[in-house]
Image (cartoon, rainbow, N blue to C red; front, side, top):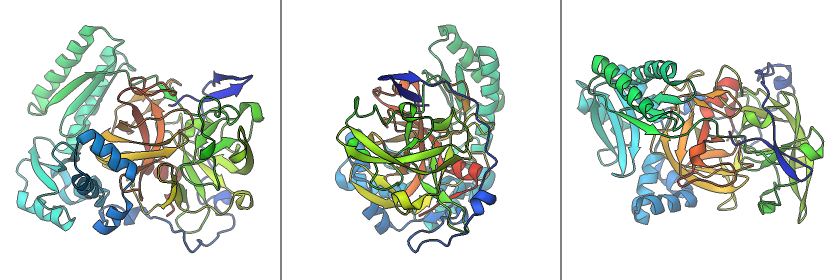
Length: 489
């Protein structure tokens, strides 16, 4: 993940990644329950059960579209302002859409994605489904024929995902575990083969896939791509003492702590601090106890319980930092195969009261979180924002937007040697040092999607971005599911 780097004697040195076990301190324990504070009048818990299938008013979405998302969409898809806004509004209409359609259609659900070339949702159902019933369900979710097309596919989404899993195991055994990954985006099977492997590896992958599809699902399409996605840059963290030198980011230090703004370790001493970005404010659902979601690899070297700071400008070339709380519930490098942790905020006095907001660097405004994409348990299960959704990241380097190309990636091996699964692959989104943990939202800014955590080799090197750039996002639903919190709005 965007590689953790350390400032020492004027140079950035790579930190060695350490295995971090899942912290036993969680919501509801002695630390989590201390105080049992009531919620401030302008902060509320966003419960998971209130999210899936939630229809967002069109007027609300129209007012909350991120200008950066509008600019990205017009530049990428060459659409008019009116058409761009229509499409982005349609993308924001229903929170938890895949999980809601899966709940309604069961084994008939074949997947859902947004087709940005044609400008509408595509809802797939298995052959033999009652199409009038499907269209009626979509109308109940405010998605009429102009907003969503219905297609029939040979396999359900769950069956196709299981098929991809079996192919993934077989190809890893035959081609090398870290050089190939298989997933099931849209209505297809996709294999990614590392360029490190010889050309005949692609032919072997093709032969294995075709043989299995012929036996189990002959009408399912497949694709094989040659990309280097593993071994990329971890952590996007940098020292507060050095980040003024390569980048002029002093304007992005906090005025008070909020999502999208900087935080850093307060141990080890000054020369070795690492800096990342705070994500979404969260905590227990029944009482107020604030934790910021962020990337777990930002604390890969120290374990849980380490303190952290927030910083603000002191001089044109320096910052002043104050202790905020401790880092807990880190599940980076654990069996969850994800990358998240929490920043427990216990020192309100230094930095002001934490609110359920994040900072948009492109508009210089705070946005109140209203919605998020929950998971059912510790696996994806249609819980992440769909393919085709336009999303934006706000963090240490500012604002960047892109398109979700895969919302349930196969295994990605990081440079640190651990595996990531169920992550979100965003093409067009540039992330560099310091951006780890950045909040990622839909074009409708009040809907949380996840946290920026990783740049694969094909997408950049942590300092400069490829064309197109790529950022891998940790789903907000997994952070909430594993750590036991809900986002606050």
